[in-house]
Length: 114
Length: 117
Image 1: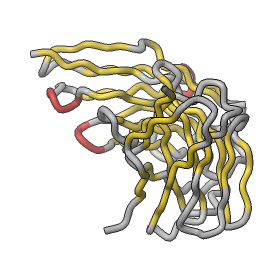
Image 2: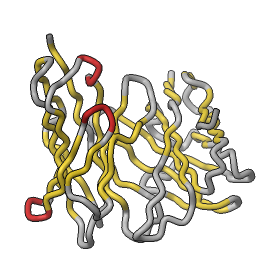
Image 3: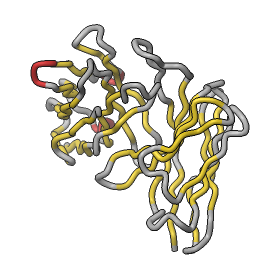
C-alpha cells in the first residue's frame, strides 16, 4: 500500500529564508505525489503534483518540489519565505487502483517569523 | 462561480445525537469524498462515492453513514455510534474515472468543525 511520511510536524523559518518541507513516500509502483496547503479553518488547496513527467515540479506561490526516486522523496521548497506562507502543508500519494483516492501525510505546520 | 460548499461551518452536538453535515458541489464532478481531520493525524478518508447511488467505505467509516442520491450532493451523518466525533470534516470532489495514467484532481470545500458537548 502507498504511504507518505512527513518529517517534522512543525517548521519555523525567518522571512526571506529558504523553506524546506520534507516528504518521503512508500510505493510499490511509480507514485503520483501531491502537495496541498491549508490555511487555518479552511479547506485544502493543491500546490503542485507529480504524475511521472518532469521530476522538478513547479507549483503556485513560488513553491516547487523534486521527485527523487533513489531517495523516495518529494520535498517541497521555496527560495524565500513570505509571511503569507504560514500554513499547514500536506503531502499525499495516490492510492493504486483507487481511482482518484489519496493517502495523506500527517502535515507540517510552517511558521514564518520576522 | 463553481465550487464546493459545506454547511454549517461550525456545529455543536450533544452526546448521543446524530448530526448531518452538508456537502454540495456545482462542478459537475462524478466523485465525492469525506475526510476527517484531527491535529497531528492528517486527513483520513471516511467514505467516497464515484457515481450517483453508489459509495464505498474509506479507512474510518465506523460510526458514519452517507447517501448519494444526487450528483451534486453527498451528505455525511455522524451517528451516536461514533465514539469521538469532535473533529474538522472536509468534503472533496473530483471528476470521475482517474484510471492511470490519468488523474483527476480533488477539490476541497471549506470544512465543518464539529464539537460534541
